[in-house]
Length: 458
Image 1 (cartoon, helix red, strand yellow):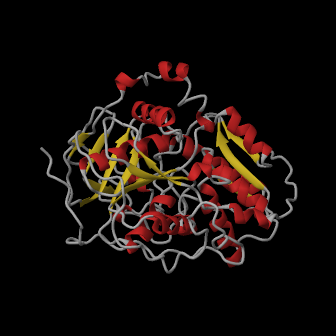
Image 2: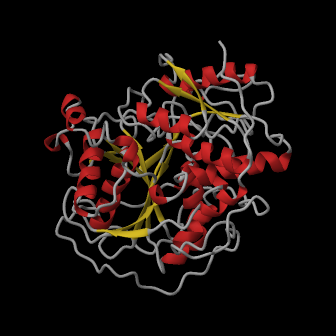
């Protein structure tokens, strides 16, 4: 195997000032029924996208520790979105970027990444274990053998991934006086762990809902082929903070497509698979807990999904018409329980890594596992943490759209990043002020104070 020559990249640190300060929008579009509304952080409007926050954090952390030499190449596996953020970080900090992708990556995204100066290494076939992610990680190790001075951020397991979202959490706390429910899409686990951990320090009673994809292995269900990219995982990243979640929803592609298209048609803000899935569950949370203040993050915009989510032919071929989209989740008691395959909810959160992940391990399943490191996919049974909340689904629920409560205090340890108000100069995200590392999530504890319990299931 050969690689394209690595060209030097001149650092452009002024680009770092463009990160953050994305809008916070009120979403009222009917999604699987009417709801009183929720807040959405529109990360698709940020330069480099949401993943630019994490990419900058990981490269700055590596530079600070001496793991990344100035001007050395960076290589990473990506389904696309993190690649855009890493290409941005590479330009800003002066590092050539090599991205290991697969043939499922949309052609316009390949062209865009090459336009940003990244070198692409394409994988043609999924791995038997780990699917496309596993195959990309295998190729990544081959590329690293050829690029001996290259740095691998390892977005799946690098705690600097989580730390990069301290600025996002700070922006949310500045804009909201109160927050009761946070809905997080989960892939590598970085943004959900970073944002949820920080926001729960500000609001200890915060209820956190995970959104995964059908076919994903993240929360203890058996992996299966997935149509949606960027949401869920075939491997088990160690960045997923299982103990911050109170429940998990698996959303199917038909539901995500319908939500995306309705958002675009009625609120003029939308995105891809993760955005549609998170919006659907946020609307459900607002509807089932009237009076609660609900927020979520829209990780990206719609542009890379024009040939899938927003393509009528793609929708027809894959059977994603509106009539195939569930309007409420199927309830299961345990992740191992069978379900129809569409939108599913479980209030018992499984941690497949809990029993087997060695402390400090950094190689995810699907990659070449070094001696002494257990493959989490071989775990015979996941550990279970029982949530204390259930919810009914009264479609007629209404609630005020205002956000009451006392003014929020800023996070004391999230000073890096913009103030959160669009157009505000804030505190720029600069190389001499790297984002702080977030404290590890606290263990789940019975009796954690709650502001409210959702109404019991009928």
